[in-house]
Image 1 (cartoon, rainbow over the protein chains, first blue to last red):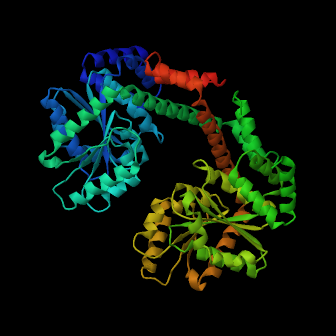
Image 2: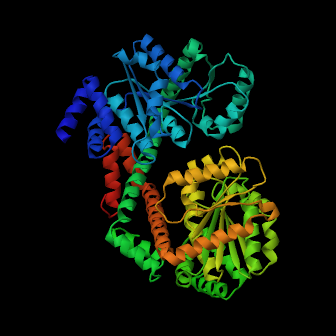
Length: 319
Length: 319
């Protein structure tokens, strides 16, 4: 694909062409020069979308809740883009779709755009690709973008935590709140949801969450509200939506939106620099020059650190 | 500590001074310029020790087996250095010592040197520090170095797999062999041990291991023997020792020792280059210049990738 057609894809995406939007997202997911070019073209047209991260343990009902949030947004006539991100395995692509049958009911709604993203290429690639994919939906004019993560791990917390409003979903049951705390989920939560609130153990879980929020002694002047939902029946979804919009209003009132977004950009640039230098490390460690150095270290004519110094000097930068 | 005293420590370590050896290991664990200097001084005097990695799931009895291997070596009058490596947490230092009461019985034996190493500093630091610590014991004249890993994870597999002979320990029980296979342990195993062989499920576990070894279709002409042990009673330890020495004889006969060691050096240099460029990434992403770039990206006057290009150009190397 030439640069010219990337430019065309960006223009068509901005004009509301769903096919172009889908192709741009594929391009971003694949990475490479075209993805970089696309982001450069998209970037000036971004910054309007409000992003909502939805994370929590598997089986907490994140997909069903996301589906209900989509319906809630559509009731107000709001358009929405959804990214379902699974960093855990490239093999679960099929499973994601299977889990998302319900959500796909919105797929024929022109006001909704849903996309699953699974791991491609190297580790951490998805954490770097997700903000770019959000920018595509943002530039396409979606005022709301929901980023739902599948699975639990640091990457999921990072991905879903990198939203304007992060919703953390737990279910009633001994230890669930504690697990969420251990996984660092409570730290990134702007809104807490206890889904499947018709199950036993609701009160204990709510109490646990409240205690842990108090103990955490956050310096922020926003205390995450705890919302009880039964997503399968739609119970509590309006309250969840009210909590999300209250959080947005809070950030906008206090002028914290820019601060939070700049902090996220800072993390993103750090990630990009790390990835670029990681690529450089990989390319330094291949080829005849590297083989020769390994042989010299093996022969003990140079020690490992001195060999690495020599290699980095050959790169033209200070070791 | 000045360079001069590092030189002195190296000389005293080579002369058999245990205090100097302990201080050198601390210095290696801490890292920094003194550690680099120490490795440069030690390196010409290394290459004689045979390293044995011992890994497997928690509770498999690795410490007890290691203790038995030490006793077996001492019976032949052989000196041995032991590194107990725990990459999982900096907090488990105390627990390691607790688990090692039995092994510490050898601590008063001048022919044995045991050292626990826990995580210090940055991620992956232990995987890089371990080969340097092995070199200290090697230069100190220990003909055998046992590297025992505590916990299970990629770092443990990497650390214990980076030995001349890698011993993987499992216990009887449904799924244990399968777990070891999933964790990539069978791939690095030169010798397989089914410890606690007096427990139910021994035959199935041995059969599972044998099947998985066959399926793996390794191109190597060495098939890992499966040794049954009851470490607490010392049963099977002589057979384990015979398997380790048979593996050594096999490698030495076929001239594969140098090939394997060079492959490990290659991995080590890759790791060192990655760590150095990771440090460079961290230092690029701090300070006024970085802050200014973040602000410009936030203002959308430059896109994230272009900002990273600018930052890497400022580093003096090709982006």
